[in-house]
Amino acid sequence: MTRLNSNQVIALLLALLSVGYLAMAWQIPSFPLPRPIDSDLFPKVLGFTLLGLSVLLFLEKPKAKDVPEALDPNELQQPLLLRPWARVVVTAIVLALYALLLVPVGFVVTSVALVFGLAAYYGYRRHWVNLATSLGVVLGLYLTMTRIMGVYLPTGVLPI
Image 1 (tube, rainbow, N blue to C red):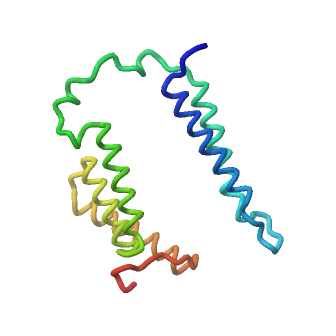
Image 2: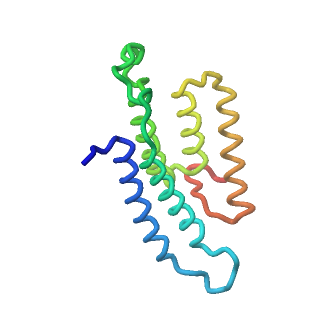
Image 3: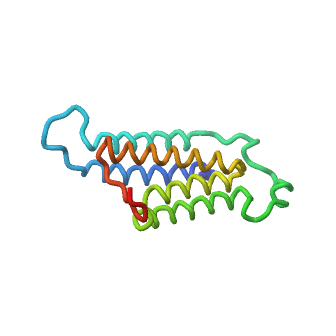
């Protein structure tokens, strides 16, 4: 029996996740009125897409250049929070904080802080452009979702 590489292990985990997601997607009730696209279509398409991509990842053969022989000396000289694995951990923690603070603080404030903070963390140094862009995109999304589409988003501390 051959040993599974890391991509194959990740692919198996993603396949299990997608099967569970698809099982939940099949339990979404249909809308009582007939219409061409029902509320369960997008979750089912997303689940099957994830399942297909996990199969492709499982079948992909790793190339010799994909497996580093040793750690890059430049990575070891960087500060701890700027190393590649630490960026993944920091981003995951920031996204968890975003999810926790979304309702009490509000969509606009937390989303602007998320976009601005992660862009600055990943090295974008034009802070005024970053702030203007994050405010413009988040406010555009907020106004489109609440005023045009009628979706409720938490206002939090801002009286919008």
